[in-house]
Length: 457
Image 1 (cartoon, helix red, strand yellow):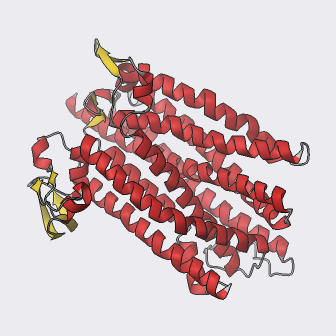
Image 2 (cartoon, one colour):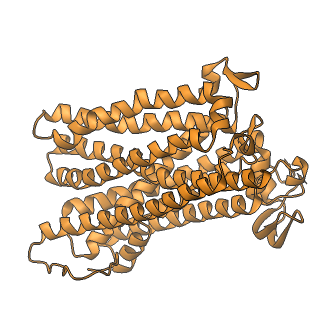
Image 3 (cartoon, helix red, strand yellow):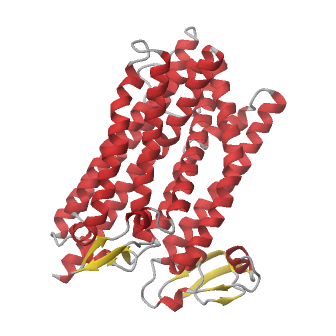
């Protein structure tokens, strides 16, 4: 029986990880894209320039597609609380249930109500009402993120509750919602959404540019997206430092895994590269800089940092957290350099060199990579707990036979891969369709062609 439970736990973790990895891709885009659409609408109302309206009409199609996939994947993820993690709702359902309900009642209903007006009401309601609908949908996406991040942050740094007969009961909802890590996680996630969408807009615009589109609206969106990325990336880096200090205080084991620090103390080195060896509690092939980790973590060369060995067996899988953190930081640095370079090129030459444009196309979904890496750091770094210090992952997992969990895991993975490929194809198809309408004399791609490349012109 123990083997079956262990296998079910493993499959359940993989299944939920796959589900949330797929789901988070779409809210990450819809949150910030809603605000970009609202900005397009405001600019059109203010200036009367048709380019802003053209940008709105093109990107609202992608917003609708993204929103739909986010809703569908979110529903299946909610069911898994009962099917794969019954111990979770049984233990902390008094807190998780209301927070999830608040998200539905205040945010999802708001988005769903005004999305129809936003998509189909442009010619049926006044400009003021349509603009208001766009604002309310954008606000709803952010409000949804607020409630979800509040719950996730509470699972990371729980407070404002008491345990009675093995179940959590709320005693202070303000403390639960605004728990110690919540402000940092919310700000970090919202900025991550804006950076993801900035490169998404810039990448698709660059793709159209490579197909000889010289639409003023397309260039306008590209410049706006690169400007946003250029400004927000340094802010995100500074916010990430603040978030790291919060993690050092409240989740030192996660922080130690992120840094690959086994032996703590003062003057801890920064591990640039290593292969963490959890069996020996050492790093293989380590390359480090003395005392640097203490400096940027505690802002002191001799600052004290706890090591993983101080936490016994209550440590997360180190290697995934260690490498995911470096991927997130690496993509962030790449975003910083690329946004400044591309925006400078547009300012200097008023045109984008083809090499830079191709680079932007490759960076179209770079935000997804950074967001997924960041979420893996957050979620894997919390292990072995599902709710830190309250409920372990093993305690919450289902006792269903592993074969049943595996079958649903396989079905989910197959479906998600298909949907993700379809989504990316449709996004680039909409871009090509917009260019064909702009330039009807352009050569139409043959229907018999089955190969696809984002660089095909």
